[in-house]
Length: 196
Image (cartoon, rainbow, N blue to C red; front, side, top):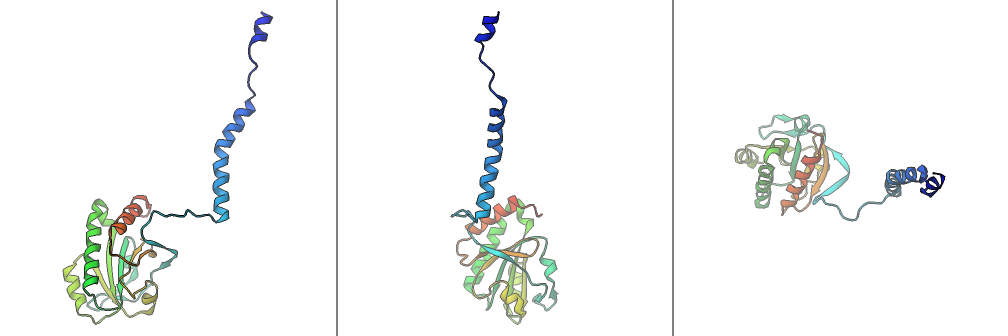
C-alpha cells in the first residue's frame, strides 16, 4: 500500500493556476492602460467623415424660418442632424447634395425617425428658401445672419455635418460627392449610440 501511494504524481501547486488566471485578466488591462496613457491611436479609422476634435456646440440662437419666425436651436436637439450650411444661394451642386441627403435619410429605413435634415442659408432674403421648403417638405430650412452660426459650422463650401442629439457638431464631410460614406457612418452611429 505504501509503495502504491509513493508512485502517484505529486499534485501541482495551486499558485501556478492562480498566476495563469491573473495573467489572462490583468495583462490586457495593463497593455490597454499603457497604450492609452502613451497617446497611441490606431493609424486607420473606419469612419468616412472627419471627426471634429473637440466637437463644437451649436449656437444657442440666431436661426429663422423662411417666413421670418425665429427657430430656436433647442428645437433641433433630440435627434441626429444632417446639417448643410451654405454662404450663397443654393446652386445646382447644392440641390444635388440636398437630394443625396434625402436618399441617405430614406436608406436608413427603420432608423429614419432618429435623423433630421437641416439646410441653413446665410442669406435670409433668398426667395429660393420658400421653394426649397416646398420641394423638400421634411427638410428644416432656416436662414441666419448670426456670426456664431457662420463660424461654428464652416459655411464657405458645400460641407455636410453630422450633429449629435445633444447639439454637438461632431463630424464633417468636406467633399460630400459620394454619400455612401455618410450613410455608412450614420448607420454605425445610430446602431451603437445610446442616445435615442
